[in-house]
Image (cartoon, rainbow, N blue to C red):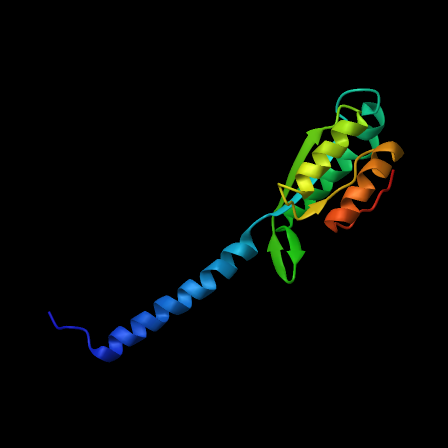
Length: 136
């Protein structure tokens, strides 16, 4: 068996280094877009939240993913929704968003249901520099 030539070794090394430098970018581009929110699934706000807001979030994510995902800088990325029940409680809602934006570092947040919850969460979004649209 012939030994590889110096030229062949250099070519293989260069190809390996090139592949390793591109691989993290490809993995990052294919990572899902993590979108977090809290929503009333129990308590007095449930009727409004489950009628007018959460179903829309779920439908939007489902339709986007069916179409290949969300277009981020020309790359389709799957949407991963991260949600929890705020129990129709402002303090629970605020703690949830603080975790989503602080330690979880989701890519984007969707607003909770209701004025009280939105007014309570808006300062957090400002502090963590997340865009925050409050439709309800």
